[in-house]
Amino acid sequence: MRLEQFNFHHLLYFWQVAKHGHLTRAAEALNTSQSALSAQIRQLEDRLGEPLFTREGRRLVLTETGHLVLSYAENIFGLGQELLGRLEGRDQGITRLRVGSVATLSRNYQENWIRPLLADPAVVLTLESGPLEGLLQRLAQHQLDVVLANEAVPADPERPLYCKFLGSQAVSLVGPAGRWAAGSLRVPQDLQGMEIALPGPRHAVRAQFDALCASEGIRPRLRAEVDDMAMLRLIARDSGWLTLLPGVVVQDELRSGTLVTVGQLAELQERFYAITTVHRHRIEMLERLLSPVAASAPRGTALYAHPESV
Image 1 (cartoon, rainbow, N blue to C red):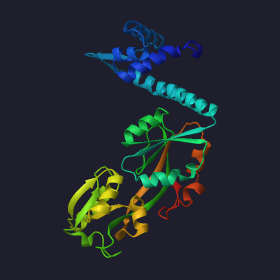
Image 2: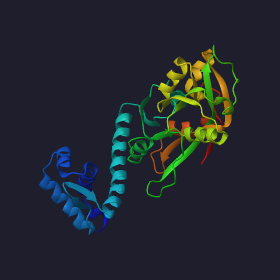
Image 3: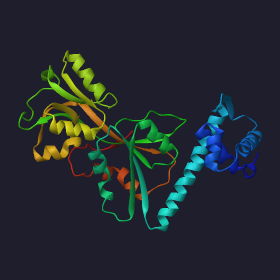
Image 4: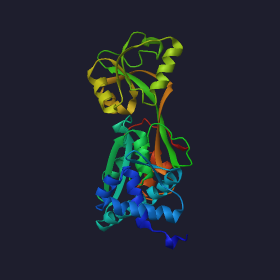
């Protein structure tokens, strides 16, 4: 079959059925009948010479070929959606940048990273947060332009991504200024029995901290474990407990003197990454943010190391 014989309308119908996993819901989304939708899928299968679905009860399950076709359909129609969004923005004289951020990443860090764009009237930002895997799926479907994360993405030939290292910083143990003196505790040696709030188990540095305490036989008194950095910031500010977190999370409180860095250990590092698709539409403002010069420039805080590519 030559490309000009390929029916992209049939591919669109297949894409919708694969996304919904059910003919009825896909037919409703496409405003067509189930019988018409089934006929379109059968015609696509006939053209390709292989089945794309098998039935399991009422659900349609992708075959191995179906998964392969879906991966290409995601790119084709994801790029089509991106194209329409770019054209819409161009008509209005604006540039849209869609940024995803993992839920465990500091919102202060995200704001620092996008700060060069905040004064640009021609920029419209879309900011999303959520689990890394969900954000990567949206990135692969061209529904996001970049994902900010605190862990690198393993190489996967089925989903080629580019992972740019933006910088790192030591994780700090902070406490209320009236109760603690700066640098007064060794980490982890002085934490035995100390009341402490920690990042949740999904956070990149939590496993590092737990392993460090275990190696020294130290058991702090856990009072809270929190995935959301905005909530952990509030706990650090209001609870009176010691709190382990990246300094950027409480940068304002450290500057004002509300909190102090009670202890720090160079081995505990949070690393920051920008993840993009390998084949993507080049957006000038995003390229500037990803450039070494931009990434190493001040972001309103002196907490970042110089970047490097991985």
